[in-house]
Image (cartoon, rainbow, N blue to C red; front, side, top):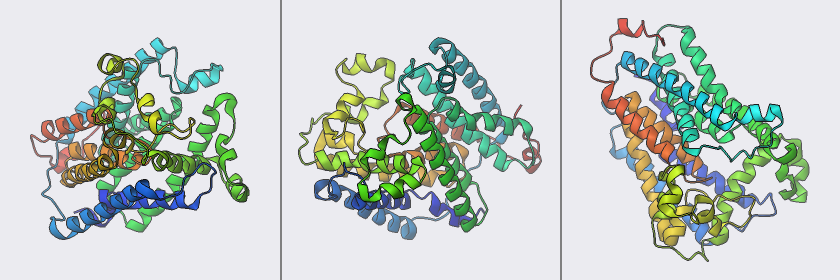
Length: 407
């Protein structure tokens, strides 16, 4: 049995308590001029989120079995599936690059001014990114569970997955891939908790630095630390002494929920589900389904305070649709949803681990935007269920594990 103590790092209720407590604390610090007071219905929603997560955590620890029955999969079948998906992924990247005339880093090197949000072919681009997450998780799982110490092909493909976010110049992809890999690693890890926390902390610091570096170079004319003007005078020296990634992260965490604080009391609910579900429709079909005037930006902009910070956490959709009540019900739904997939992931079936790794990343992104109701997350869950069912037909023997290779 793996070291179960590590599961506290990825327990969904623990994560909700931590990230929303940190959000409340950072907003309360008031380091930037744009922040609202952390009070009213917006603050109440955060308190309810923390309270319900604490209740679920208590229920989970005292009334649920700690170790669900194991349900391991056939590594050979998973390897063959990964090989096919990798070939498709490379082919789609080549097709996209040809049709779009390149991608992030290549455009930067050539000095071509392309809006980073303009991905030319949204649905194809989204599929490429989703396959990156899936393949990254599969290869990490195979590396951890294979007894071949140095499997060159697996490592080469894993390296290609890791550098993909840098090549396309996407911090969002970088963060989600990092979070999903952390989740898979912890679910399959047998190292000590303190050692894992140290490595994760170091990785987070490196990621914050890269996050700021990519952000600075992605702005118009490469303006360094563009949010530095938002910092209150008393804190300018402190924030300017740190890598710009710290300012970026602070702004992204606080400003997004700040939009909720700013608008929740004055919001007039639509009493329709499209603000919640619209991102489940592929980009190419959005105008057909919802009409040209309705898109994600136009919907969220109704509760946005600062036009430079146009997202408002997971709660944007439920609040726009049904007000405070929608936010409360939506929060409860994603907590139950997360706990469901977490329990399945504890069976050690990689298919369910993939599903939960996607949900795990969505939980962290919930302070920025709604990543749960998106095509990318839905696709990963569908693929994960397929792997869980398709790849567990026959048992895996030790002599088979020794021979696992990525061909």
